[in-house]
Each structure stands twice: as structure tokens, then as C-alpha cells.
Image 1: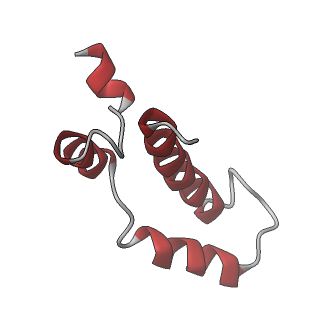
Image 2: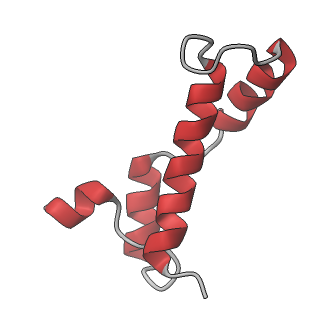
Length: 71
């Protein structure tokens, strides 16, 4: 069973992975087509602030972001 905090962490880590994929200095040797797909996916991908709102609206599905846990 996936916990709400695990679900939120997976979304945010996937966002970071896609951002890294777009940067040739972070992940060299990635084909341009893959970088373009990562950019396209991130265009409408939920941000940390979106995930914070998701947590507030549906805490049974999404956990707090790391920033929420420290405040």
C-alpha cells in the first residue's frame, strides 16, 4: 500500500528527474528527442505548490511536501 507521503514524494522526485533529463550538464548523452519529451511532460506537471494544495484538499491521497513538514 502506498502512503500519501510516498505518493507526494514520488511526484516531486519524478519532477526532479525530468528536470535533470533536460539538462545536458547533469545527464549527458541523452538524445534530443528524450529531452524534448521531458520538457513537454513538465509543461503541465504538478509543482510543489500544486502538491501542497493537493495535500490540503485530499490528505488521504497526498502527503505534505517537505516544506510543509518544517512549517
